[in-house]
Image 1 (cartoon, rainbow, N blue to C red):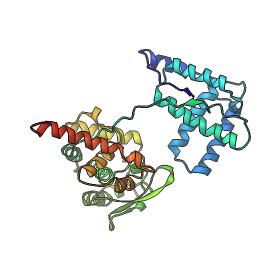
Image 2 (tube, rainbow, N blue to C red; image 1 turned 180 degrees about the vertical axis):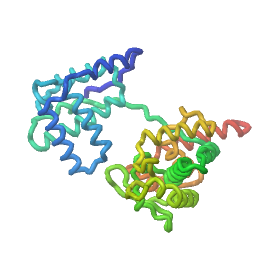
Image 3 (tube, rainbow, N blue to C red; image 1 turned 120 degrees about the horizontal axis):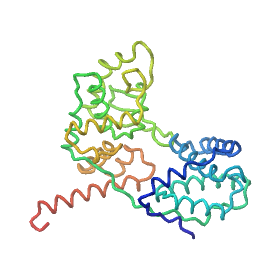
Image 4 (cartoon, rainbow, N blue to C red; image 1 turned 135 degrees about the vertical axis):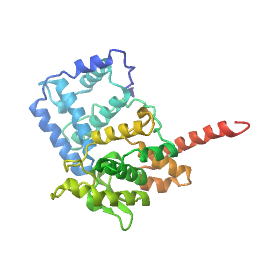
Length: 323
């Protein structure tokens, strides 16, 4: 098997990537092929919008590189290797190459299944090994400081406190938090109906503090910003619109500074990671955690055991006489 090896990015990698992406416009035939593929794979697998967008970007990048010559369906192995060599020279990293290979396999696999090609040009390619990064998790005291950072005497601060309490209390993804509809929150039962990856629904309990802050936000802030209109998202901007991931991320960074936490230590899913790690630290089992997080595979959930184990090792080294 040929390996799609990761490439060390040189100091000029950013400049090279910028030059590399200044490619010709997307050919009309390729655009039609890609949209047809995206529509079919969405219908077959029910993939999330983010996954479909990744497939589309990867295939459009290849189509632009190919130009107006033979289309994607006519791509052979030699031409594919030329493209991968070009990406290596442009400084693309292992994670980006692995995602590209996943997109190409889905695309050519569909063509092969429908009899439009005789052989899959990705068949002999091996994905690069990606070192799995452990999620950054804040301590319980840091979470307390972050939750207390919003100024709840202001409408924005009250909304931010409710968002943070819910994300930490229910272990939501950022996309799940900002897309949560007001009708999916049941304060009486203390539960949410969350639509996760692949359009799969799950019921998630939330803690009493989250319920209290959401109830206050719904009573004091949300009607003020609606101005008599109807909006589906639970959490709104001051203009009455739903929030974007970028706005949420900027909010987290700003509140981290208020809480005295280095913003570099917080990831977009920082509260979700803390939710999982703290549950394990307090005795939760992996199967229950898997259901709460909405992971399709237990192996995805098991990464949090490494986080908890590292913490226990640090405590042992710090406090045990033979540590």
